[in-house]
Image (cartoon, rainbow, N blue to C red; front, side, top):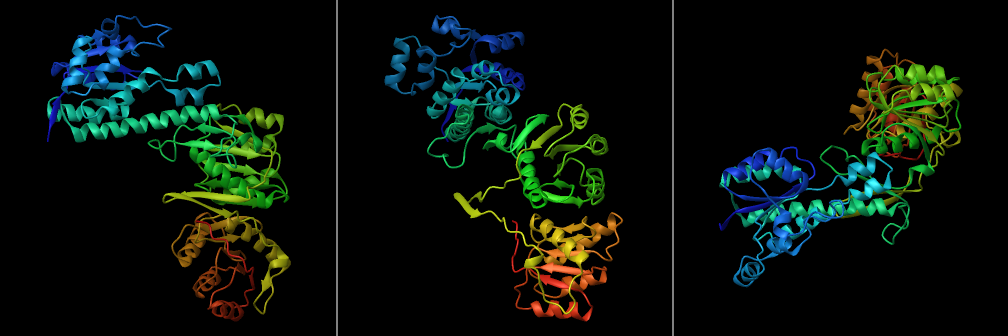
Length: 508
């Protein structure tokens, strides 16, 4: 394995955090350091000798610091191949070799998400730093690049383990990371400038693009493509995160089923509803929804189909939640809920759900028609000898709406227009059924007299048997199993009405 010794380094970073141990190790290895501006002062403050880039280029930092490293004597030292012809030119023009570049770019994304001041955002577009990264990465056969503070620990370990020597494999891996940093940085800038403009690649689906704080987890990057202003008016709170947006989408899709109903409240967690209820007042709807699972409600997303008043605002303010959405808020409710500056309040302009759904997977994207179908009582086909009562039909319709928006396999239990138990995301329908009953009992609900909905058919009569033993009084399911009759027979033997819809609502 061919190793190269690091003899010189150019360091130019925005965030100095974590840099000191690297400076100390480079100093111990007698590496000559070049720097400029704040980084130079930081190194000098450590008592380590460093030469100003301005001494190399014979040009001062100009244009308010916009031009510091952009000079042939810097980029020549980075881009020169360590071979006779190039080295001769370096000597001819008195250009020092630079074996290592350490850069941490201006925080463009953080600035773009924390302010609307365009001049402040534009100033955080790094020019010199990104150029240094690309030049060093291009010449990875001879130059080491550390493109962000995320690579500090890896690089420090390399330094210590190899006493300042690097292999081409090490340098190539860091170059790969450098181009990833460069690509992401340029994409963030591009999406900021997109700002409502469409290009050929996005013209059918993208109106705006916004860099998010991060994706599902802090180590993942995230960008939202779309126009939230068409559907919401943001009344208060911090910038929406990736997870917020995913949950909000699920919440709006669910509440679209109840947009014309009496006051309905829903609580969602990780896209699944843990509480849904319809009542005669908004406050009663909230209290009933929360009762469905007051543990999972912590940190959840709240949505209502009616105006939220002060009494309701005071009631929901007793728990911690991320986002609350409603078609409107009374002035007093809005003022009360806005006391916490980070809490997100969204005024829903429309419950319209997009007609097409997209998902990225493998090396492409799949598209489908959004599941916009919802069955009414007219679509219910009674398949048992006993027909459901009017009250049971009302709850069965409610149950069918809820089950459609939970992850498969799923079972929901509804009693008096209230979600009292649900099992979702299970690999067997039996497990989902048992989970729904267990959750209902855990939160103090009597399952006797409740109705059950399933997102797909029952392959065996085991679920209706388990439900019957828990006191379930009526069932709605799509049907379509070759053993449908076995479930029907069990219901007939136990005087349980069952209706079939003919429509499956899988949700993966």
